[in-house]
Length: 298
Image 1 (tube, rainbow, N blue to C red):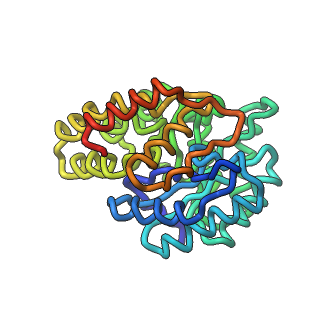
Image 2: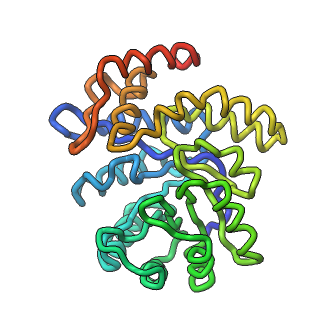
């Protein structure tokens, strides 16, 4: 039976790498335990994990390590999107073999295509697997509310959507206005910047980065206890850090890893980011350190 009841905080793993670009698997295991100890409900391996920069063998090693360390304690979601339907089916089958509980797939975008073809892409993949699929809606790979609902109508597996196309708040509202009794579970993404607003409009979870799982869980707990004001207070308090973590062009990956080193999760030297990618300068590092100290995260 498909699990259509996932909810809560599902941070996206950061992939620790040494200066030669080798994956530091001990730090992956440490990160998994740290996130679970902080109360997360699931762990994702996806774009923020730089999964698109790793070979097929490395993808398998990352997923296998996470599944082994999780050991059934929380759900594991693996990104299996590919630039062809066949490639995504291959990634998806392999992820299920290695123990992923759910898949996350964004539309193929290298060659622009029509909404009809994107719907067919999801449908054809879903016919070849037997686990829940999160459709990933991003600003450069859009899955509109009407497209997501059509996908959910066609396939029981296409039962989740992660909404990240900005602005996410009206997008989630539109989804709930359109979907009626269609079984489509909504998560938010986009770094969790508007997670409370998304929860208030029907989202049942968020998939931010992995640097502050303790904070995301505290926001979720406040919301679930009906302390909406308290949830907004925490979100607003940490919004300067959330802003820093949302920077594009690969900069956010380097910042994630730097913060994980500063918080004692990654070992010193595990902050390498494969190119092409921007990197923070020394002024930026000092600004981050100051903010982490002010927020009590060190």
